[in-house]
Length: 381
Ligand code: NAD
Ligand code: ZN
Ligand code: ZN
Image (tube, rainbow, N blue to C red):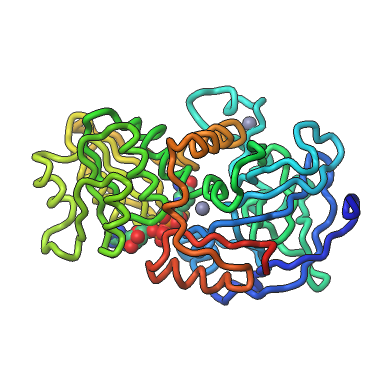
């Protein structure tokens, strides 16, 4: 290909500073270095975490360096590979991942966790293995969000943070497996280990929460209670398998008391998909004593939650999940298969498709609760 080994000039949405809308800019994307892959990004979802890093950095999120290219829920095609890359070739369809899987470390070899730490510190700091980013704009280094940066027509990621997927997968759908859907689905299946005939309550019915509802349904839970302050989410939640939907604003007492009453003692599984300590506590207190499990999927990096020790002592389990417990590189291709085999829904999460130039509109739709997932087409703009 004509671009191999050369800098590619393309369009990206750059976050110049926190709290300000993204700017569509021409950026330069350098060729991949050793163990790196340059990807032509075809489609990306817009996740709540992107919004939080832009508008909550230094508040609910730790401080991140700017300028930054956000985006971490994407699918694309390998344009070129750097030296020592053996598993990828130009033309391969791929999903870049914010969670690595090196396949060799103690964590990758353990069935107990998906928390591989390959390049971790650098990726959290917005750079790749050599301490620099491959994206620049107006002569300035632009940081890469969690090592991904999919709000750019091209990006470069470590080869331990890319899943190769089947060639017939529609990229504008399977991009959602790069974050939100995998996270919520795995929160139910892997972290919660939801059982047949159990009762569940899912707090927050955005993409992560709806995917958790889908996971509870696949696990054949008997009762799935959806909880959201936005009743417009209820119809979709029912389509995904929620048996009841409740709005905390319709009750004068705390929502956990409502759930406990409705279920005669609490649910077997409470899944938090909002990212607020108060709701995490409500999800925990909604679970029944003796064996209730609460899984936290919602994100905050700076806040703390307090829980009743007595409620924990009575036999409840509290756990968190990162990327739904999936071992990223290894498991995402299997989730793509599940979608292709109609075991897992993706199309139903997509409420809007927009070109890159309308990325700020996608943030607006997410924050106003009007969208579940907007998919941005990178190559149409
Ligand atoms: P979203 O904004 O689409 O959905 C959040 C939902 O929560 C909305 O429907 C909103 O109405 C609802 N909500 C807000 N306040 C509420 C309240 N008090 N009670 C009940 N519902 C309430 O967000 P999303 O993209 O689905 O992400 C959800 C959370 O998951 C975010 O915190 C995100 O950062 C986090 N996340 C975590 C991981 C992980 O690896 N653990 C991965 C992706 C996203
Ligand atoms: Zn995300
Ligand atoms: Zn590893």
